[in-house]
Image 1 (cartoon, helix red, strand yellow):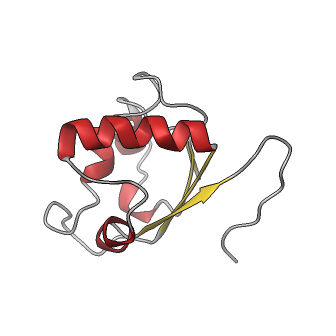
Image 2 (cartoon, rainbow, N blue to C red):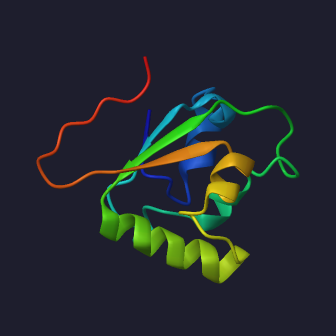
Length: 106
């Protein structure tokens, strides 16, 4: 599980020998630029990826998802909520409310 896909996430994973393509869960706490990097996210697109990626479950609040969508749309003209993009980038978005419990994965 990765908590926040910030600008240093990929470098930190590489430093500790973690293959970001194998991360299955992303808990995105909020979308300030030091916690979310849209450029890292779109590298999941099959045209950029060097191998088949694990399915990624993204867990966040509605407001965080809307903010993430704004940054992604501004940079890449894609819709985080769109089924086509979820299929193309191999992820599922899980919107949670304050205090809600959620189970993802096995």
